[in-house]
Image 1 (cartoon, one colour):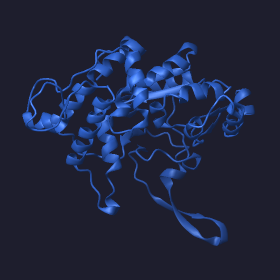
Image 2 (image 1 turned 90 degrees about the horizontal axis):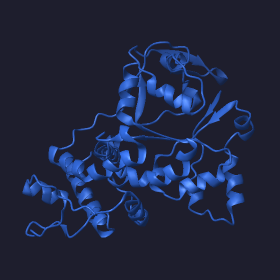
Image 3 (image 1 turned 90 degrees about the vertical axis):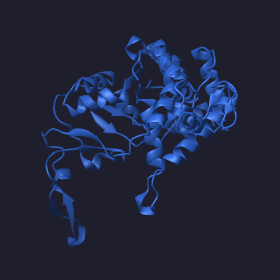
Image 4 (image 1 turned 180 degrees about the vertical axis):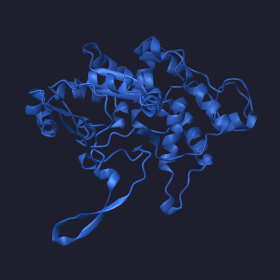
Length: 328
């Protein structure tokens, strides 16, 4: 099989798509894929765009534009850890002497919780002042100050479909660290569009990484089978010239990288890692590691966010099946 990645995201097109220009967008987007080789079953082409999950119009757009019936793979991480990781990534720039400050994260959460109340995802009133002791949804700052053990949230008595409608109304606002963790209402449009034809696979991030680090290829083989590819039991054979690996994770081996000289045009010599050159032929065991080691999340912050996401996580087994009960 041929693998291509880094294809253009549909996100820009889906925002301007209407029934009148559907044919034009189908032609534009299809040109990024090798349709003859896909139709002949000799090529597998894919692209990855995590932000697709927050745009409810994209599943319908893909279903109408991609006539070759693509399959969708979603990997979900514990929403609490995901929010902290996103914040750390966006506020970590050592070159500019910018470091993630937990107080900034708390302030950001306070602002986003206020928006959740405003748009009906949580019930008000929103309590942020220290002298306000009404019954309502507490900000993270107030939850930390009061050191309470009771739930700081008042949730809507809503169904998953009703929450999905509220999430769609919230689309015009900024996409903060918390919003992308409301997995069940965000996934509902994808399930409706793709699950009936077995074109949607949803996996948990944590066991996937653990399996890979232990050399267990069970989940990898499930993904390969889902994509219509042959199951493999050898080490990764990705070549560095095949495309950029994610900035957030790398495949790490236990062998030290050593340099060698490579001859290129005009007799100019440059150095290149032997580990990269031999990557395709290597049979040594590789393990997944997070590229960055972030500071741990403060205990009260983790408590607060765990309570926030709990009812939304409970919708996952209603949407995806029993295996998603009490996963986080």
